Length: 123
Image: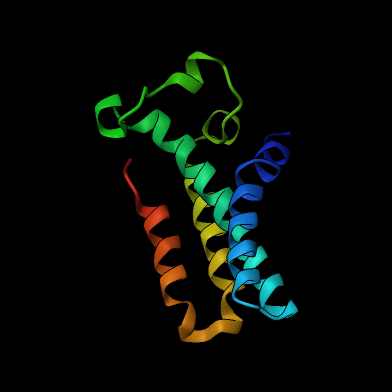
């Protein structure tokens, strides 16, 4: 259920954003599919990391209320699979995002940098 929610929320939002950019650049069908896969994986990774930060960072560091998901008893990745498995899942999803960019070679270096930044962010 947790994966389904985030797949249809955060992952869909990022995948759609990436698709629209690719479509406006007249991407081929293959490029569009690759970028859609990148956006989905990146969106899921973003959500896992967001869930992790909610339990590991302070409100001051985040710039928003920390721990609100726990207080609201929301299903989050750390609550469901634990903190360490959540970190591993974020890394796995980021690797999947990188793999989706393989058809672009060096042209996708900025998208790879974005994926790395999101994985390593602290707020």
